Amino acid sequence: MLRTSSYTIYVDLPDNSEEVLLIHGYTGAYDKVSSRVAAYVRSLEPRSRPGSPDMDQNLELPAKQETIPPPGETIAVLKRRGYLTEKTEQEEETLVCKMAAALHSVAMRIPSYVFLLTYNCNLRCPYCYQDHLRADTASGLLRANMQPELINRIFVAISKLEANLSVSDAQQNRPAPRQIKFYGGEPLLARNRPAVEYIINKALALGETELSAATNGTQLHAYRDLLGPGKLSSLLITLDGPPREHDKRRVHADGSGSFERIAQNVTMALERGVQVNLRTNVDRSNIGNLPELAGEMVARGWYRYDEFLAYAAPVSVGNAKTNTEMTMNSWELDKALAEMRQQYPEMLVIKRSVDSLRSQLRQIFERGADPRPLFKSSFCRAHSNRFIFDPYGDLYACWERTGDSKIRIGCIDENGEVSLNPEANRVWRSRTVISNPTCRRCRYAFYCGGGCAAQAHNHHNTYFASFCDGFTSRFRAGAAEAYLDFTTSTETALSSVPGCEMR
Ligand code: SF4
Ligand code: SF4
Image (tube, rainbow, N blue to C red):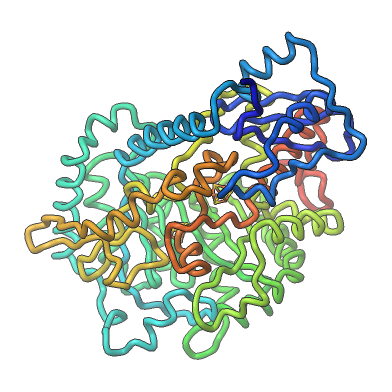
């Protein structure tokens, strides 16, 4: 019997009651249809599906929509594109599970490596998820810095891991070189420079490697000559507002601020051709300062660099001190940013989370690009093959859960042999869109990946819960905006902002 696919997504277009965008969750089809056709497809939806986040779907028929069956040839197209199907709900779910398993097995063969050089940090940010380590003086976790002897063992371990994964075969079809990231604590403290340089040299000797770091940027000037294409080429740096706001949040141990030093280092890194991803952690108490921060980015000329990307991310429930009443989810933040752009055009320099999806979908609309590369089986690489090495030789999958030996996925012995913890590996590496019924029945599953496991644990006390974070609304907003960009070419460019030149 013909029914509406459980994975049909409806995107209502703003100021357009005549047309609707249909997107299919596993065929990758995108089609604009008349609202009458969409109403017909919607009318065949079951009222609800157990375990599906349908409360957040726009499944209700808009008022006064007729549900007249369209002509046979339209129905044939809807069927061919996947929106209508003769498969049962269970058959579709089984198909989604098979597709996810295939995607996951590809992801599992491409490892990435993180060197957590130290748990120590020179800043004292209030929302730090590693804050508890500072109180836990008994563990001594903050004392260690990664030493050359361990670095040697880690490179032995990398060779063994890659041999086990047959990475050499996978790499032949691999679009990107090996990825190594520095992480902490604060990895790029000046005193860590010998270790960083040693790792960079060893990595480059091993083959083509993309080197990046998540750094607070306060001592980046000590790494000047190691920065640039072919060396440390990508940095994630945080500024939490204009100077007066940032300097209240990202403070040194003595209480002094860090804005100006970081800002100078951002400029230095950009001048050296480094990709700088500038993150602002936003909650309800600092969101109002974003226009001023955007003004700083314009005034300092950062927006002129192709290698510069600024974005806002919600402060997550990181530690016991986080004021949950002040936090917002990604969709609330996105809507707030969109509104601010209306009033402050310079806010275009700070990307919303939907902007990346919007530009990817625009490629699909404009060039008929293959939508399947957007599909993913899990939310992040903690669930496939990311290996985080800490200064004790312990191995982790998720950066927010480092330092907790109960959930380490393994460790490296004195010969560089990796011994994996089967239970922790099961938890981290098996969490995909099929590992919980809510996600595997979700029409957005392959676009979302199931949400952040650490946040799922923070909110639901299990890593296997879904964590939607407003994804369904963000997806529809991004798709609608991409379609409007495509049809009207009205995307506002930063070049139209007063004070910003053409780029
Ligand atoms: S599980 Fe969440 S916090 Fe951990 S690495 Fe993935 S996205 Fe980041
Ligand atoms: S976490 Fe993502 S895939 Fe899972 S139910 Fe929510 S939106 Fe769907």
